[in-house]
Image (cartoon, rainbow, N blue to C red):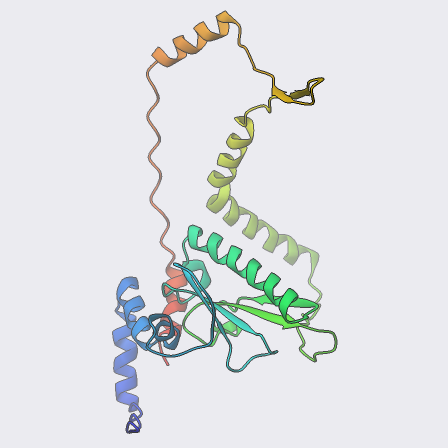
Length: 249
């Protein structure tokens, strides 16, 4: 039985909805978007789709209006309006899955390439309010154009942009880079291996002199420094603003 078509909102109702969304917290906005999001309904099983892969964090389905046959939409199961809202651990996971799906497309569909595309925000062509990764099979002369215009820019303007980005990234990623440097410094030295006449591989044990052992014990007795308290994360108001735009049909 067909359901009656939904009535369109009046201009007054649209303005009231916009005002309501404007005053929502990020958590309330996300819940509101989830109720309106067709891809959240697909993930929950309320709407059917052609599923090609699923795990605890992601769902991959075939696009019903593909750029090429085999066009895959890789969705995080949690609702994120735009990609920067996604936590780092989920970004790591979805990147790994996208890599595997691209590999499967290349080997299964006789594609000679893939485009892995993220449209982040309406200005970048994002139409759905659920962030996703597009994996698009490519073949020679398939008439899909991903060509970026090559514009000219003045040297002083280029340098101004570089400085702004560099300063912002330094404040955002500086501590992470420092952690990576520390990890490089404390990496254990690999223990060499030798081959015996009987073709058995034995591990050469590293033996520290007694005075080094004494130094280690003295270091253990010293009181450990307390970990520095991490500063509070900067509120990403700009991301919430973009999410609000996507929450309005």
